[in-house]
Length: 374
Image: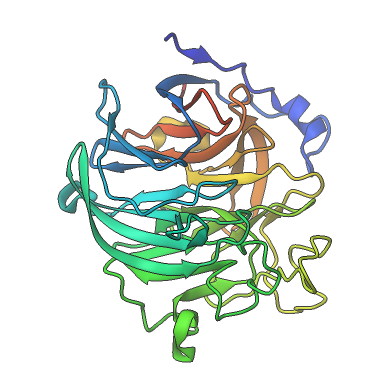
């Protein structure tokens, strides 16, 4: 299939009229052009993509896991997943390889699990070992008991911040009390070691029970986690209700202010400073309407030219990828939208070859695509 060339991003004179905070008439250079090529096609809602060495690993919501070698066709992985509850935002979701996967072959999945009756049970995080390109065996269950609800707001994104520390972004399962309740694993960023143990340095470890897992709380539905390579700083991305999708700094012990009680009142603000004066403010909010921000990754390396260090954020409803410059004080400046011709985009990840890979989420004829400058 031939490569698809993007339309050049508009020069800054035009951008200055469109982007908030830009001064009209300000002269800047045009952003670089880019090329997109298909990597895997004919998929149905691929949720995440990662790499075990140079071996690509990706999943589909319905419960399929695939590997792909460069210049080879994808191969289905045989693994004993639990019965999945596949509905709305439920199914086989986040996927990440171990930082040492090139040697230990470990990877991790997050999935919505069904009971024997077929009804929803919970969301669980499992650890696996890839024994060949087409087989994987379960190592252990790392976390269980993350709420599902009716299928809305299941999260679930997995990303490592260090060699051992796995961060898990969860959704509130459309339960109004979950985000502020430390006994619930919903509406949180959780932190666990790759061997399944819980760090005693987690901020609420001393409270026992589920609170031991909690790194921060007060979230609605975390869809993205991204680690900044130069600093190790972690950022989270989450869906707002009718307004205010957010990008947040992942900070220890912080409350991010989502509490749609009584009931599930989605007219409440995403960061309710009136009810929670010490709630941490978002680094960026979409305003109204939302764009359904999803997965996120940093672009790193000289191959990205002026985009080196940029935060890329996928959009589902907005259908594209947002680019943000990140200042030393972590202030985010939105400056471009790319990949607008592919529909809903769920996940973005920089691959080991330095390219940006993204997954589409249109429900049929989905795929994984590779984006490079030039």
